[in-house]
Amino acid sequence: MPHDQHPAQAEAVEAPALPAPEPDGTPTGVWSTGTGRGADGALRVAGLDVRDLAREHGTPAYVLDEADLRARARAYATAFAEAFAPEAGLAGADVYYAGKAFLSVAVARWVHEEGLRVDTATGGELAVALRAGVPGAGIGLHGNNKSDAELVTALEHGVGRIVVDSLPEIDRVAAVAERLGVVAPVMVRVTTGVHAGGHQFIATAHEDQKFGLSLTSGAARKAVDEILARPGLDLIGLHSHIGSQILDLAGFAVAARAVLGLRAEVAAQTGHLMPEVDLGGGYGIAYTGHEGPAPTPAQIATTLADVVRRTCAELGTPVPRISVEPGRSIVGPSTLTLYTVGTVKEVALDDGGRRTYVSVDGGMSDNIRPALYEAEYSAALASRGSAAEPVRARVVGKHCESGDIVVHGVALPGDVRDGDLLAVPATGAYGRSMASNYNLVPRPPVLAVRDGAARVLVRRETIEDLLALDEG
Ligand SMILES: *Cc1c(COP(=O)(O)O)cnc(C)c1O
Image (cartoon, rainbow, N blue to C red; front, side, top):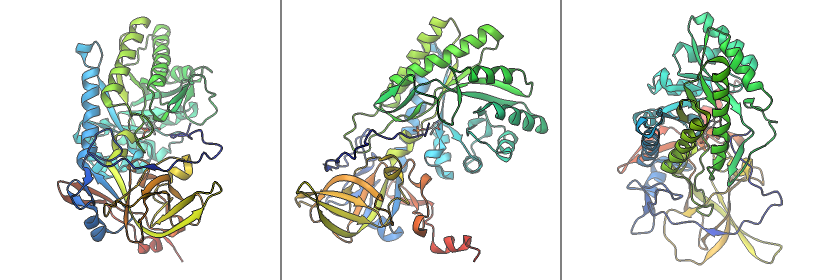
């Protein structure tokens, strides 16, 4: 399934213009913990005034609160180490940061320093993790269509696991491993029929999607047997990833029981007890503050530990080492996007009401999620406070598409105007990583802020960068 979910909004539900929650340092909130308002009403992140950031670095810009990101990474490492400790009757756990959410050399280094491993899905992500100094053994490689070049790089650097996604891939990994004279540690990605996103999960979904090997059709078991028959492959475990932006943990429990069942069946029939099980990522976050509470790392870890302990006891198999792969819930809330307001336009609506269209200097090129998934975001006036009466606003970009919407519905002060700075929170995941050059717009920089100082993690693209690719 796609890594993200389409909310059920088929008949274009009129989004109410909800006020943005104010930044107040709440760790589970929409804003990073270092975000607040100064005495003059302007937004500050980690002690830096956003007006100074905009003056020095321009807009749009992604502003990443380093301490917030590190704290979330550390919270996962601590929660899983505690919940899966041998004293708790379990066999330990590893947390892999899903690099596709956002990866740069600094971010890979930070999450590694905080005790996490790194999941990659392409040669590019692998290169960044390696450049950051993450040891190969702490890197995983995913992908439903890995190239031979990607497999070679992964095996040359001794990656900890290659997650096999199809039957033909088994031969390809075995061939590369043989050529390099190594044994490849592999996992099998199993689709359990559990698909989840937002609040709901479906336990018997159709497997009509590109990822993984199905449990019910027997494809997953066939992959296990084929891997066991190849001496160049070491079958270390099973893998399950059920979706993204998941707020209800029940789907993870159903999927965990399914993969643990297959592990027990394989052990009973072949004598091979796989030492590991990966339960994927996909933990949801707050984007607007109106979606209900997001699960905390401690809640996730204790819920999963409980299921693994009880299921293995019922099956009579020793517990495996567990791994998980959160991406969004580590980097998402750490970052806001800073835009400058341009055109402000008021339009009449069919219901007699009015809507204020607030155009900003970016849009779908720096945040494709609203157009791709009808994702909801929030926004707040960032360069000043305002006591003006709020209006029903829609924040839109500068691209040539009417679907170029940044925030569908939000209440903004009625005096919002050209030159104001606007901040959109929770854009750290799948923002810069999915950014494009649509309309030949250069992609924004990622600025890390910490203790009152800013540092450029990824510089702003320039028109010269774009022209340099054009051979004329
Ligand atoms: C996308 C993905 C993740 C991370 O998902 P998040 O929603 O960012 O936590 C983890 N594992 C796999 C296999 C994925 O495809």
